[in-house]
Amino acid sequence: MRLVLVPTPIGNLEDITLRALRVLKEAEVVACEDTRRTGLLLRHFGIPTPTLRLDQHTLDRAQELLAPYTYVAYATDAGTPGISDPGAELVRLALEWGWRVEALPGPTALIPALVASGLPTHRFTFEGFLPKAGKARKERLLALAREGRTAVLYESPHRLAKTLRDLVEVYGPEHPVAVARELSKVHEEIFRGTLVEALERFQEPKGEFVLVLGPKTPSSPSGEAWAGVLRAEGLRGRELFRALLERGVPRNEAYRLSMEEAEEDA
Ligand code: SAM
Image (cartoon, rainbow, N blue to C red; front, top):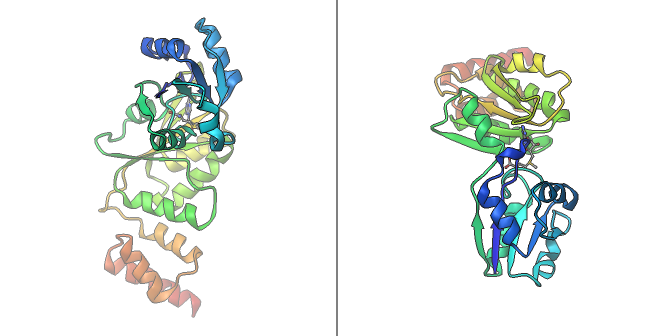
């Protein structure tokens, strides 16, 4: 039993690899998120292999659906299966069933965005999509800033402005960012600047986006930004002081910020 993860182009059909084409031809079936989309790709390359829908809604029946096959190729809508898509869960299941799992190298949105960003690449963290709202989102943003490494995020066009605004709060307005839009497509654009400039530039964004944030160095902690976020969470006085220290804000600044709040409240 063999499952091969096949990366597919994120915008330019020339990015399919020769090996990917061979595997798509040889496999008994191409399981995929969207049979229409993957069907178009297969037709374009003259590959007659049948397709089978396997997305987040059908994964719970994956074992039954794949039972008739011994050699399955898996493709998601675009890019490398397993990166912010149902591929990761399928791999987990296939390993549980004792299948041999292979992954082909190939297109993905995160690497071109990272390497073209001009930001440090020797240490980076991939965040994918942030939680949509609430405490989980805030905590993740704060943790990300604490990492001290370049961070790569995926975002949908209708949430991009909100995410940039939230990032301004945590990283500060002048923090360096690259916004990669429509990578490998006709309208590819890589914006490099500060968070507040990105916010101005992408008021009504269209297309697909990857955000790359420069590392937040411990020597430049934005105490004000942290205090704003923590106050919004309801922290005051000693609690605020302690939370600021935990986030790397220098002791004297943390003290000043927690006292400011106390004076305002008085
Ligand atoms: N598995 C894919 C990969 O390897 O990159 C990612 C799948 S995830 C569901 C889709 C997200 O990837 C989009 O919302 C966007 O953030 C990013 N993305 C995919 N294609 C892109 C492109 N051509 N340009 C910019 N971002 C892209």
